[in-house]
Length: 188
Image (tube, rainbow, N blue to C red; front, side):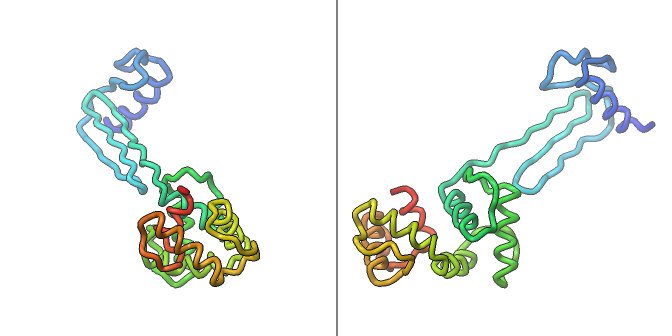
C-alpha cells in the first residue's frame, strides 16, 4: 500500500476515533502519518479543497456570497421551468446548470454564467409568460405605479409603470425589464 493511500486510510480511521498517529479528538484537524505530497483541487463553483499530507489534513470550503441578482435570476428561471432548486441567491451548481440549460436551449454558449447576452434572451421569454407579466403588474399595482388591468399583457400601461419604477430607482427610463429593473422591482 502506498504512503498516500496509507495516509487516506489513517485519516478515515482517525475520523472514526481510532489510532493511527492521532487520537481523533480534534474533529477539525487530524494528524496522519507523514506523506510526501501536497494537493490542491479546485472544484467548480469556486469551492476549493486543500489537502496537505505532511502530518496534517485541512479542508477549506469557502461559501459563495448570496446576491440579489442571483435571487432574481433563480426566480426568472423558475418561472420558465429551468430552475427547481431553493431560491437562495447563491450561484451554485444547480443554478449554473439551469442557466446553462437555458443558454443551450436558446442558442447561447452554455457556460452557466449569467450576463447581458443571456439576459437579452431571457427577457422576451419572460414577457411571453402571461403569469409572469401578471406578477409584474400586481407588484407595480401594489407600489401604486400601475392602475391598469392584471391581464398579462405587457402593453403601454405596464411600460409606463416600469418607467416610473426605473425613475424611482435612478435607472434609465426605458420601460424594459432588464436585470437592473427586475432587481429594482424585486427590492421595492
